[in-house]
Length: 344
Image (tube, rainbow, N blue to C red; front, side, top):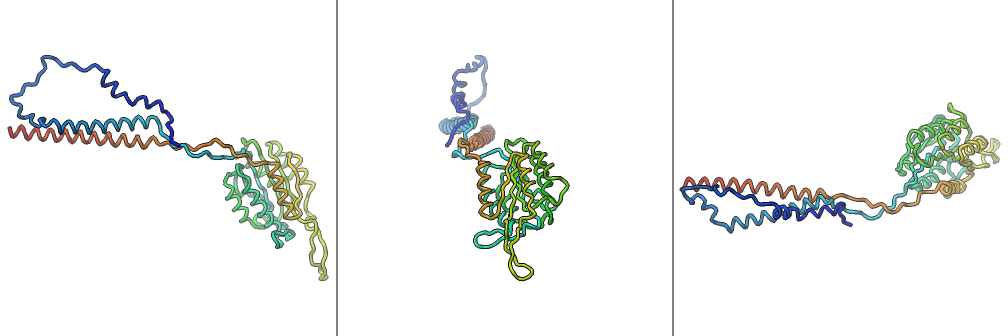
């Protein structure tokens, strides 16, 4: 759709006519006169039809230039189709455990058995793809915690860097407190002005490394309004081969510190979830979608592209062309006059 930002500027279109007809003409002195011995030198002006046609042609170009200039002053613009722009104002940080215990193959993806990290990547990637409107960041932690992606609206980048993570990248142990503290620092530095601050922390163990106690980290998160949802991942039982050649059942999640994870969530107003299989992990992320809903699209935004420079450029081109023509006409007149005078 085409529109004019300042349509009232079109009222200036008849301004040259008003100036022409309203201004008082200059009256010359009755004694003024030009005395020449002969009119032969002005024979160049005898062909009035050609001169009148030239003036008429230039007059029309001048009118077009003026119309373009007024149109540019009215600021023409093109208004695009209405866009839906969901912006939630939420900062959502994901913290994923890459310690050695995440290599346990007690999850299934499709029809094959996979390790915990592979299942986490698949489910968390789908979750990230649904979080339109949130600024998402990614923290990977093991023995140390690293900020892999700062808060961003670029969900594809977050997904790619999550899928490229591998077990042991940050060390073999688990520094839950350092991961929480890093999330607190990054959210405080980068997005403290947002309405909602959320951290989703996924781990399969207990805090065995790092400099910050997890509860202390949760208290810091509470101070800046960071809500933490904790997810304990790992099956409760798994059949493995025994030394004697038989089979035995073990609990692969014996090291999971559910009490600390629950306390972290309670301190910050979040919730603790237990993921025992892939389906359970998917249900947790769907529940997180309900608890932290994605922003509804906000209709009403239309992109506007200003186009005033097109008519303005046209007016300048015509003005430059007319100026050049006037200059050439003046030069030609002077040259022909000189020739006539020499001939006379």
